[in-house]
Length: 152
Image 1 (cartoon, rainbow, N blue to C red):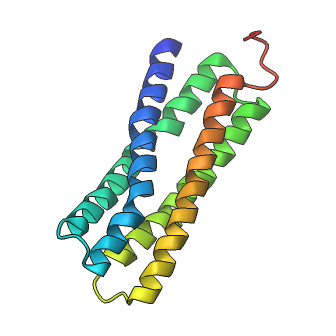
Image 2 (image 1 turned 180 degrees about the horizontal axis):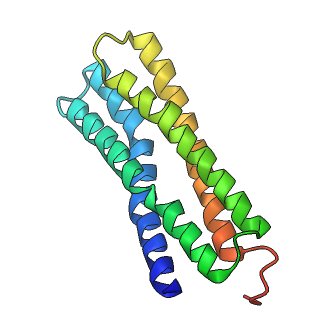
């Protein structure tokens, strides 16, 4: 059972979180191109990237669910590396839900002036970078597992 839970956890993390990191990283560029009128297809691409982020954010809920189930099976729920990973995961999810997705929606909405749009896009680029670093840190913690007794 542990192997199945871990497999689902890793697969969902790769598919959902990986998709979000790529789409969120690409979004500001296409949103600005659309606002500047530099590309006929940029608005559609930006809208698609936002839908990808939103959809995979929903699917991404399975990552901590299966991660916690796996940790329970392994008996490591109280380990510091896991607790730290859960806190970082919650921070990343909060950042996505409360700033990145709403910022993307703001850029997609008509009537955003160019100055504000550039500031929003710049902020989104930075926040997406923070989101990506949080997930990279969680990934390293999952692999290294400081204090692990497995000897790996």
